[in-house]
Image (cartoon, rainbow, N blue to C red; front, side):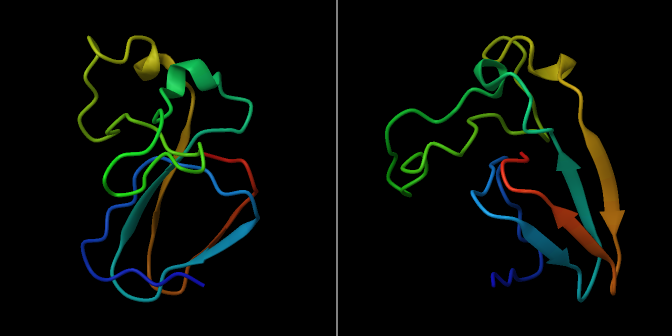
Length: 98
């Protein structure tokens, strides 16, 4: 289980296991890219930074809320689904989904 506090912003990543996301309080915007997405256009973190990001090879460098088209060409063209989750909503996220 993972529990986030108010204002938590999770970088674009995938997990190697299925997830059931439950929104308890507040509203959460979720953007999901299919596991078939071209990984080259997801711009994976290479190596490891000071936060440990990149260690598992499942984290993108792209800030989806402020996409730098010069640094990450092609990213804006990727297909995704998005939704808002409200208290009591549940979202199943299959493993490998970004």
